[in-house]
Image 1: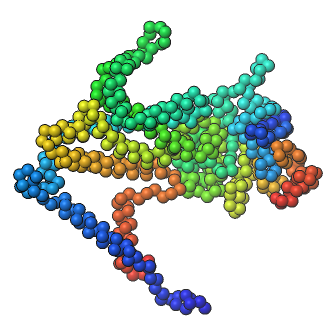
Image 2 (image 1 turned 180 degrees about the vertical axis):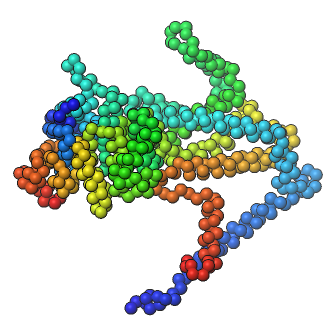
Image 3 (image 1 turned 120 degrees about the vertical axis):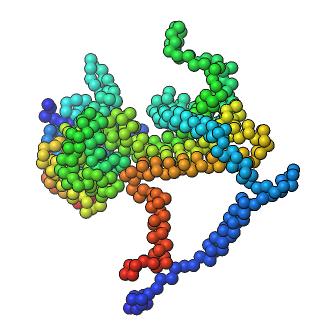
Length: 254
Length: 322
């Protein structure tokens, strides 16, 4: 068990001629909450998606729990991992999306059980018991039989969090989890995330919620144009910005 | 105080009138009655001069439930079921190949669709009936060594088998496009969400993508089934006595072509009606979780229509408002 959960060294990624990430260095320790902030198009989401290999990085090194993402280093060669190895790795990393991406043809409960049943081969009665407990944890026990279309955005996002937690992830990635929500629904999702942070989950959160970052994060990284400009303790970074870019960004979002 | 507020207590809302609709409605009704009249009218027989049913109802009555027609109908249904079942499986496989990242899979799939959609199904039926002259046998074995898994004798293909092969392969091309439309209609976020919980590509396809694609796939597939029901009549040209073939055969003997065409049309319509009802309930099943309300069943619609009419005629119990 490695003390460092995610380590990124000189990570770079381009879409065609567009360099989205250049030289990203980051270290996330076990049990820490890390917030990534920055203007849209700065590469925050792309970086997050590299961590569970939804995007392939071009250069640099990315390790999750001490294991290289997407590649295997053997005898001085980098072997690309097979899709089932990648799927196995992903099953240990939870991800929550901006647009929830719940499975609309399944009830809230089935959204939570499908992973453990189909990927882990858990019996459906065990999975149901566990899913019910997770839905209770996100405050939606009574919505177990509801379809996503019958839930509010905030409720959908909480089901999505429960779906990710059902796989017992060692790391949770949040990609702007509250950006698609009506303002009055943001709080309920952030509350669930705060509880999760308190329980010791390692979390990387791309967010525009500066209040959440200041209150919950152990460290904050400010990204712009594929580069990390500032990082460190949220009090330092958010209260006492050094670079002009971060100053101008904070003046717009705060 | 506004003009509306002054009368706020007892104000009546007068709906806009549609005189054009009434005129058109009456015209349609007259045309319909005229058509009904032709159905039950009699005309003189061109040969004998005796008065006979314009629509030859007596002949239709004689054949509609005859065992010949009934066997034809059964074969038509069998051909439809066999060709659609094979066509759907083939179509889904080709659609999945088509959206593959590998050109070695997507290019043949595109080629298949191009070929089977680009030639008339009539020609394909005749071709498969005669295919034995091109490839007398198809053998699955290991190349260059004499090891055979199975041999398929194309030159022994019966007319019915040739018809099923032709219709299935043709249908596969159309179903592939329908299935592809369904697959690409599913939001990419669904694939990502499935990947993020560790599902593999095949699992994602089976448990996440296909069930959602079904909502897009079913209506045009219902269309294809109904279309196939009637396309099977083309295999009568290679001597298969399905519904149209049987009718042809009978009218060659009694010269009552029109009456027999009417007879089989009644059967085609009857089966189409049953299929449409099946499609309706299938669509309702796959609409689960859809943000739109599931469509009403005919019975539910009838009840809500009755409610609507009652409220229009103010037959509501007192105290209720419109």
